Length: 258
Image 1 (spheres, rainbow, N blue to C red):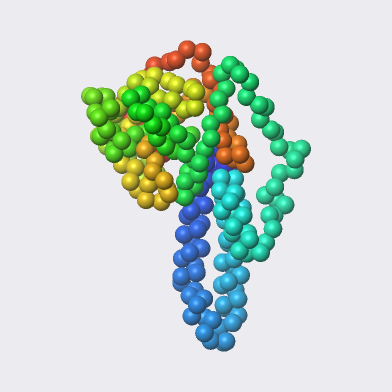
Image 2 (cartoon, rainbow, N blue to C red):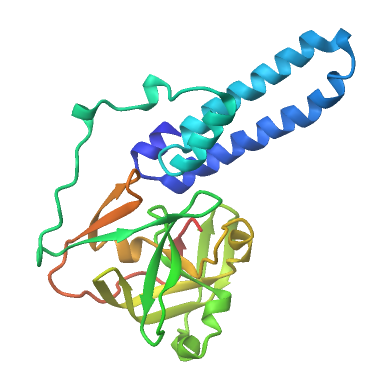
């Protein structure tokens, strides 16, 4: 988990954290402390169960703190514990981002965190009056548009003749439809002719808390130097290209991590 956070593989780090959450939940369910509490003979086992469960929650709070600080704070308040010294960097060790200067090609974008821990930003698509929410995924090599969004009138004519093979956390998906978006914007930055895979986002939206219409992947983000400020809930994009660059990717096989 630590290596993934340090490499800005936030989605993978959170997936590992949720795996731990599931293990803790399984431990509690199997131990059934609510039943143990009914018999004083089980007091030692009960105390061990409650201790290990509470301590696991303390660790989970530390793991989600970088992206869900409010949730981490609520867990600590319920447990009656303070922030551990090893989870806090001293002020002199924190590098503050310099203010954004006008016309320097740098844009700061506000992010929200979904209930499942993904970072989400508002993306503009040509032909749409309102922005839509896209998960920001540095581990995905291509941008993704949801099946539902792809059915909108503005996107119906953008399907490409080629299909894709996508490798993701759920396995390999064959014969994936491909769109070429005329223009995609994040903040004040826009790129033209961005390829996007069409995938079912419903499993993601079941636990997201608010609707995600796609995933912003590496074929957009690679044109920028990206900084995340988890404490402020924002990301900064510094353009690496002075001129808008068309897509150059192999449509046959694409690595992704939706």
